[in-house]
Length: 115
Image (tube, rainbow, N blue to C red; front, side, top):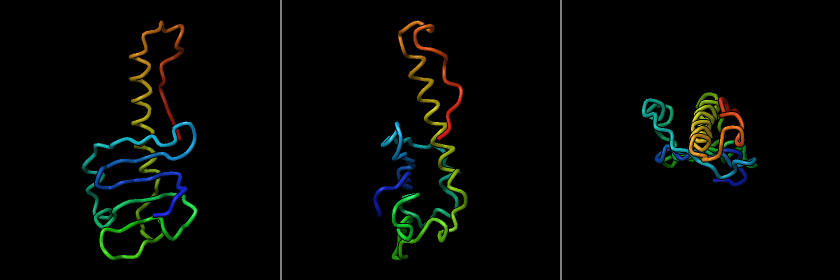
């Protein structure tokens, strides 16, 4: 797989990892079997999205050559980003809930997040 991607998806682990910004390296397991079991993902091993080598974004399980995300015809990558954003918001809210400081010290509880 190519390096320097903005996002990494590891299909078997059901993990989406954000590789840039303040959250660089943060990955979340997305527990949604109906999402992961879609037939369009059946031959996909991993995805490196928005990387420096466009032809090497999709790694297949079999001997199919690596290809670009567009060539793999997997739909809008926002499907992955939206799930990561929801998991990250849940984490931010949990962190806020478990912060022992007074509410006036920690600010408002997060209610949305968008990458």
